[in-house]
Image (cartoon, rainbow, N blue to C red; front, side, top):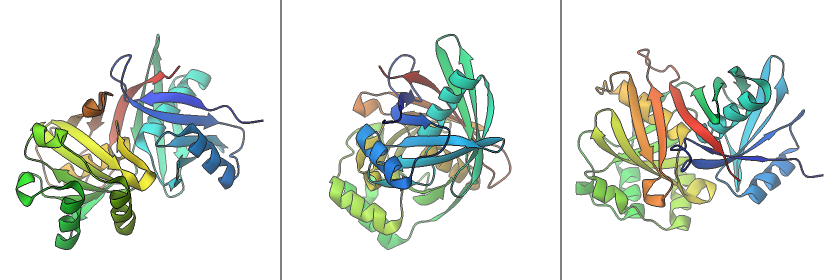
Length: 278
């Protein structure tokens, strides 16, 4: 018998938008090959698998083409489902390489969740790697803003961050999926996060996820957490919180909020709402 998989859109904008994730909550995790097959059959960018472990939950994430160390939107979807099944509260999650938590809260038909990310860190990107990235996306050096230098940011996974000079240039994002996948897999990038800063606290994002077999993610909590950690490392004037609008150019407008503590390297809080997909 095939286990039941809930289908949840995380970081939704009211009754629409958000990034679809599969959520399978079971008494025990299926075998690796079965989880991979289920994720491929579901076809979303990630499916979260959770089973009780001690006082918390053992969690693993699978994209259609392989396992992912951490996925933000699937964690938000999981937090919403844990709240629906077991009540509002904070749930401890044991990932492959980190311990995190997610809080689920119900308010009528609305369900919200907040995750605390793995620790964050960032580093400069090598010139040759940046040059390759520009070729993949058909960008020129002048398309990059000088306000936020390109960097590799991590909150559980590596994400390449490229700030563009305008919202219009962001809307033009395009690339070949196979070429992007080969580049990202060679560099170990989970996503490439193209952003535009409307204000120091409001960002617009498009997130390439070719490494997982998906051209673009409509909402990416892991990349949002990594970006927030990078902003903290730079002493960017974030005021302790940023909002990210993602998925607009895909017709799936999604809203992410990140709260950024003062301690460099600490995990950040990523919040959003979730809705069931019929």
